[in-house]
Length: 189
Image 1 (tube, rainbow, N blue to C red):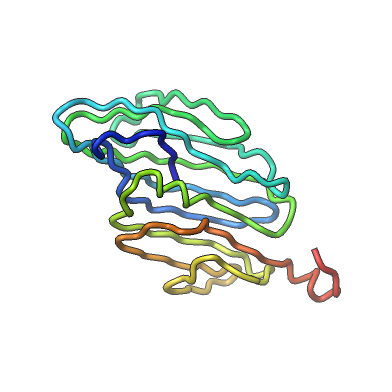
Image 2: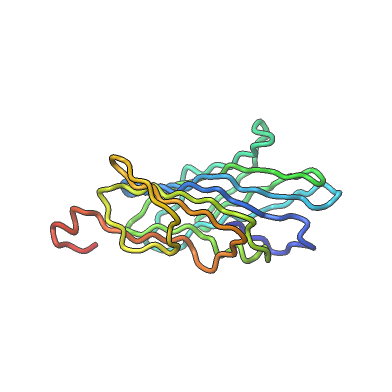
């Protein structure tokens, strides 16, 4: 998800993400854990860019947060604009860090997107990823860019699950859907 301009000798590795996606009413919610590793004997301080989808069918992302789980009392300096958010991570020598990050984005149409392809900028695949998507039963799924591994049905929603290892995304996570009342009324969105 993160974009970096230059990674010298892979001193900082973005090696795993565990994300929860939720489509609810006209919003797409994203939250989860992002794992980083410092492979050097020096402290690393790196500014990262967390991009948001750029399409007229999406509103500006809001409710953005970044929490360093190793030091939840430390304030993470977050600067956001329409394209994404910038923040700085700090890792001691030979350590890992986990950041809890999230946002929501209003959907003007029945399509949601999470940017995955910027992972290619890191030049190494994720060791593993775990994703869930909570999808309301009043919607009908038209397409999804990655086929889920499993599905659980609850009274008012479906929950899709993905687990991938050695994963280098070649496309973004995209969900196209329709509202069931529009289908039954014969209208298209």
